[in-house]
Length: 112
Image (cartoon, rainbow, N blue to C red; front, side, top):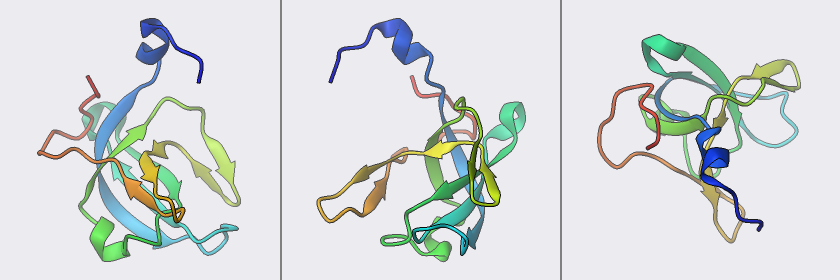
């Protein structure tokens, strides 16, 4: 990959948020959930389509802290306008492991 400069990294707004609602996203081409994530008073709640059904149940996700890019333009995914990108790591089998804070941080905390 091409190296980036510090100012490039500063453009990415990665925030912690809490999953407050999880629904099956049956209209997605691949198995996915529709998440509502609370990013605190500054950003409020945002929706995200997330292909994380292989490793996480709806029960596992409700109340979970996640990290998401919140400054991408909204993306139309079927009938849903996804407003943020939840981050994770692909395993060799293709399943996604969520990138999460390992201690409690407030909703809306920005990655330093």
